[in-house]
Length: 105
Image (tube, rainbow, N blue to C red; front, side, top):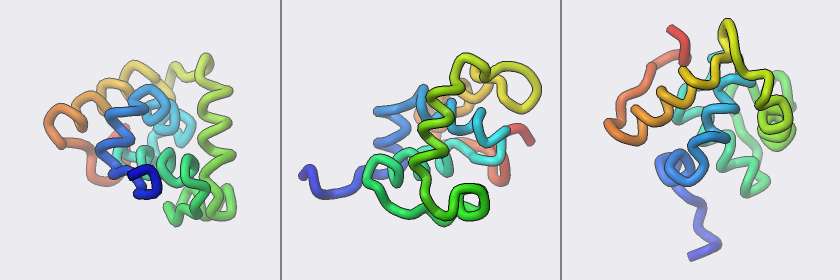
């Protein structure tokens, strides 16, 4: 049903590149599941209580996702490497394994 929210895994599968760009925009703070949760909440215009979103965006995940997409061409280098973030998302989709605390640790 369209009214039901998608699971975090469904979001990762449907939007793997956006999920990876959110990881980059967070400078590795967000794990793949956390990033997918942020994407999902932005899509459904719901508040997100991840510490990063809560503190920096007043619980509104939409501006974070918008900035992640707009800044996608700058996602390279220390703590914002898109290729690494995308590999983390792909591994999370494929195996369910992902970092526990933050993406770059």
